[in-house]
Amino acid sequence: MKKALMLLVVLGIGALALQGCGLSGNYPTDPVLNELVKFGSDKYNLTADAQRVMDYKIAYLKHYPGSKIFVVGHTDITASDKYNLDLGRHRAEEIQRYLVNNGINPKRIELMTEGERRPVAPGASKAANEQNRRAEFYIIGVNTSN
Image (tube, rainbow, N blue to C red; front, side, top):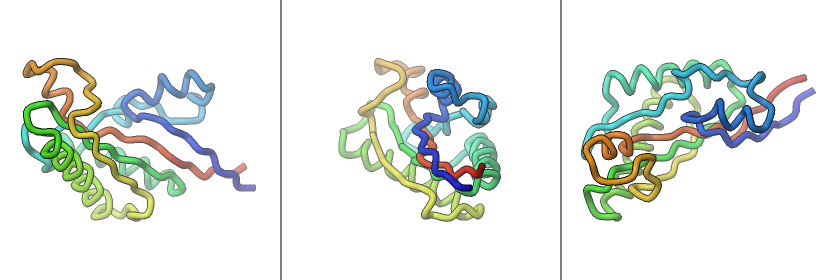
């Protein structure tokens, strides 16, 4: 029997969110799966490290073919709000291209940009900017069988 299990899980902190709702035993909590994709300053191309992170996410999505993801592109605060929203969108779209080019159905991927609006590190220091140039991943739907 199939049933839809809707999850809203930040892969960056997925293990913590799942522990709070009692599902952590049913969901992979490997640290690599939880990794964010990082970007260079004013860049949206995927580095070799970012591709390694994405390859692990692709393996997860292929293992759980009923899952859908939500990709959110983020930036640091070094440009205008409009520019950063565009850059965040480009980052999310680049991730979508990589997923689709590696066999993931585009219907399983939703995109959003936050630009600089939701920093994980406050301030404008070099370290804060590096942390804020990222993409986050949310599982938004998983079909499971009983």
